Length: 173
Image (cartoon, rainbow, N blue to C red; front, side):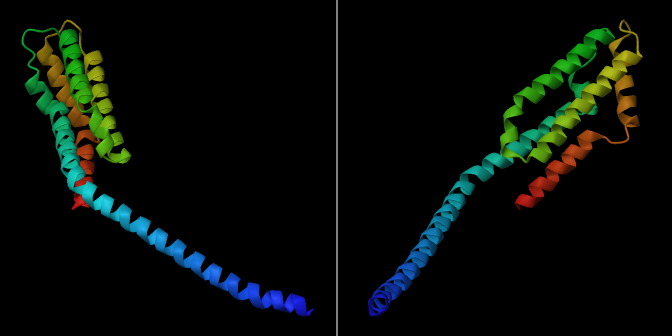
């Protein structure tokens, strides 16, 4: 019994010292790692914030450029038939979207989905408008139909996406 008591007298304080040192070192290492991560974020934010702002600007420009009012001004109907004008409009929307596709890595998934939804909704409006008129009709008739259908839309998703973009930028500052 004395032997067990002697072993406990030696090992119990050693165990207490070991556990105390273990928890102190673990906490110190965790705090050091958190401090390094924080410093890294601060250093990176100086570089990333301007890039993110540029991405928001480009996405705002994308939404503005694909809005029917802007799109129909930038892609003049000239002497095209409705079917040719329809393809021209879809091509411009696709090009604008593909040009800004990489910006999705700088914005939230919710905002990116709103932007994609706005584009898909607009393509749907253009397709619906093209179906409602004769393919051989003048392009000007298609452009009027697109504006009418866009105005009739209850949720103008381009405006909604732009508001979502502004809300997300507001969270940054």
